[in-house]
Image (cartoon, rainbow, N blue to C red; front, side, top):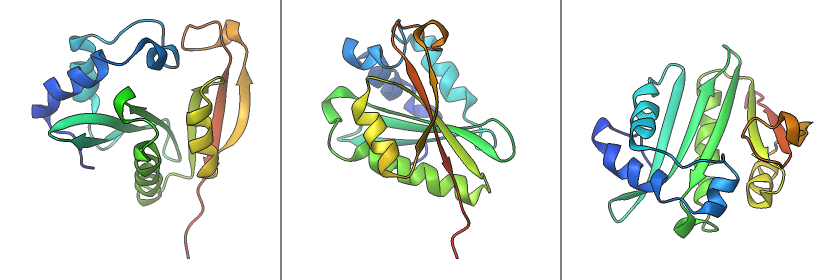
Length: 159
């Protein structure tokens, strides 16, 4: 796992644009475009938007992002390509994001997850996240007729 580089654009485009319909179902109703992935990469500034990627045989297979909402709150999101799910990559990325948040003195992490994405919910809960709020389908931010959960984790200083 490492920080992404500008030269990773094509690798990131391949990962995002080849996600299955099932994976996209949990994200949003339309596919990623090359321009959108480029814009996402350009937003990584390691002040407000942090990113780490996982590689396998020279290809990026997962990305985790930490997006500051304020000095003390940030949102975390993780995408693992279909071919690499259920191998612990998401858990490792989440651990890294939690540690990064602690180093940045973030006190609360939040994540928005499709209510039917049991694998993601399991990973977040395994790392201490709890359901904070449930959004009904008509208010669901990702444009699906399915409900969403806002999960949160309060970070405590390790002694």
